[in-house]
Length: 459
Image (tube, rainbow, N blue to C red; front, top):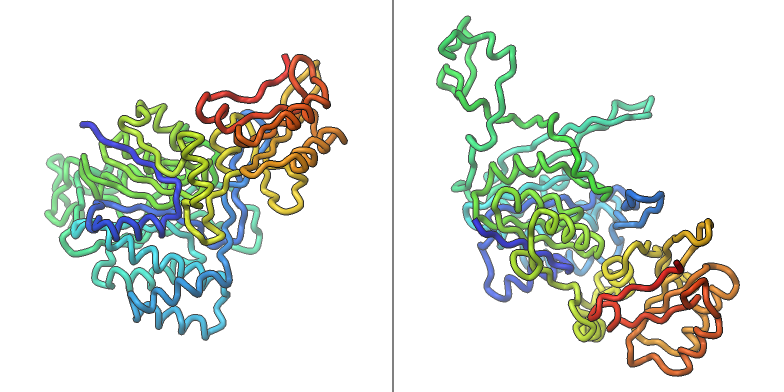
């Protein structure tokens, strides 16, 4: 069966609103989301071939930006608005209120995208699951709550004052009571203690009642209960992406609540596990993430599974040419909100460049947007990257000075070709060479995107 995998670099709320405006309602069979948990932590990607890390996302919700979304909720779901306003009056932390507001409005649009036979699985942790359940009751209706699943995972715990915290919560809701549930697709073997209570024909004895209510074991096994543990743990598919979930977990969810050829959406795509499992199970997939590295990792993961770019793998939001990039910078394609602006530096460093680590410091960063390491003549050396869409000679000089004073050993300055002047070239040439390459190199977006060129390292 031919399926299509689609990835969007976008703000998920803006994308959902656009879909609704286009009349694309009731199109999704299954939604799985694993949003940041409001844990007030920074999550890093670990690069397997080095000790370097790069921040994937900051799990902190704004204490003020939620107010506009809260007012919008008042127009679409007054009961949910009243609940959130009442919480506000209790002195609940603003970060939690912001989180619940942000998720409440997104859940509203997710419900509109779901088919009447559709389901949604919300993966969260105990810090907010009790609040989220009430929010989902308001959005989907209490009668459409189906399960609260506890996913237990192994791990070490150093706490001596608490019981070890080794579980998450997955809330399952449906849009109506006419929903897809493929029980036979997810059955698991019976436990040994259950088998001992049956005779050679699988009938229960000693007054024990079990199985599917028929008094006899189902030869395909039993339907899993709401306590999920081994073997649903991360296997060889671990990519180093923070909060990545195991494929076996998503396989059970996708098999249970969708059929081959159905459309599955994940609005917090992350490391791309949902998409990878959809590809293996012959489901269509649409994944959305605001993080560039998430899209890059997912593209590589799907390509390794046999997806062909522009054929059965389509990516939107990542500029495919320097002309498109210039337009996205000009139009600020991801929205006017400062938290969802098109970030030229991040998308360049994390998506187009190879083996470059993004700089998480955005203020007083000494004109550095990324770094990379390399070996030269038996020594470990450091490269610096600066990305800009509005270049001038003073800006270039400031970057070059970082190499001049020894902050880095090699510099890569990235800008549009139209900004490169003879003065630019003379400036970088004045710093000489490192081995057989210029110590400071100008790499244009046209070189990088259109011609697939990279900066040069000394031999």
